[in-house]
Length: 165
Image (cartoon, rainbow, N blue to C red; front, side, top):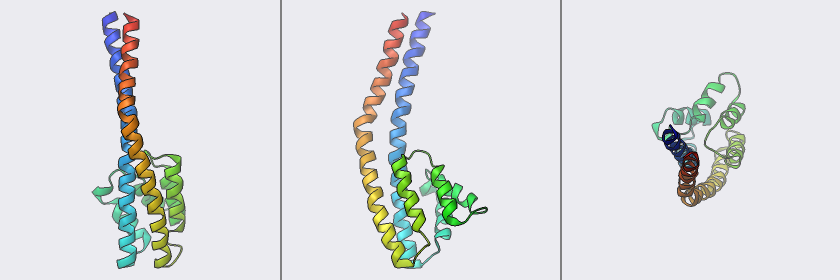
């Protein structure tokens, strides 16, 4: 019975470490898609002069942005609220992002649709740079901490398993 408990604790520690590492990886992947979304917004506003609501609707249905579940939340909230309130609610419901990531996206959403094309392009350019900085930090964090948290989780599980024996 104690062998079973030791193996179970080792496995649990390993799974916890893997989950922590996966969380870091998800943030990186989500930010990659957010940067791509901002680039697409720049193109669609700059060259097609599409309304921001239409751009968000197209992005929500695009598989390239599958990690950006908040886009669908924005679409759903738009039925009840104006775009800016829907954006805020969607971003606040986003998973896989830090509070700093969300604050950048909230600031971005606050300016979308509020000015002419040139103003929006300037806003998107500024926020893209901020998001790219966040992406670089997330990539560095995953590179430094990803392997470590997997190892620490496994070692803690192993230590707990040995303690049970």
